[in-house]
Length: 289
Image (cartoon, rainbow, N blue to C red; front, top):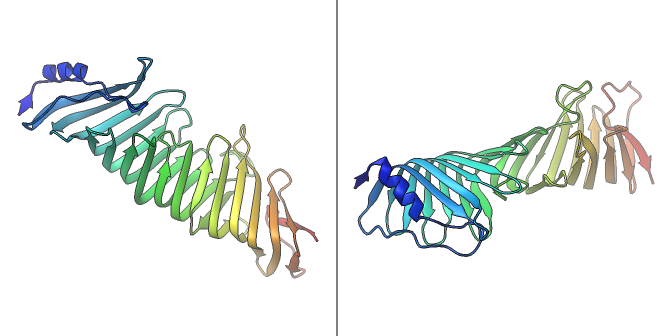
């Protein structure tokens, strides 16, 4: 059954679902499948303010769900987020959303953008998740991996496995900026609010311009809140630094982003030759017993 767009506006006024609290008004029954050309669904909090909206070019409505074509959903509040996808399904009973094909999540304030093939939004947990490959791009760099769980605004996120990140050591286009490539088996957690990220299992960090490489079981990175530069990185568990024929081992290695010095603690062991080290000394070492 197809309806003109004027009916769609009438229908939208009848619908009020809140993803922000536990109360949900029942959507109109659709024992006979209905199709709307143009679709808008709004959600409101207990204070009456809009918390989210979902728009699409077409909506197929049944008793159990609403299938939307060309989804464009926005979340409002202190930090706004936007989700788009070619196809989406809203579960009328619990308010959960499934997005599929060309899924893009954007944090409006931070400019962080995540892309994937499918994404599920759990209303009660206020989480988005996927088992598919993901790509996250922000001002610090690019991160990819397999599987993810995050809040809709991408403030906190976890990539499950096969993690790869390309991180700027300085602000983009700033003199001395280097791109460090970090890979790990995963998982990897990041917190945009505290500017913190941690990589787990078989972590390898490489600075291509100098060929310096760090290996460890766990790498924690803190970024400067204002400049977005790497402030500090701590490597623990089988920590090893490699540059050419020079190899260093320690229980822990701490990289200072300001001095660009790598301090080794806990039984440090250095194997090196006397050839001149090239590069910007990002991983130059200072050992402590």
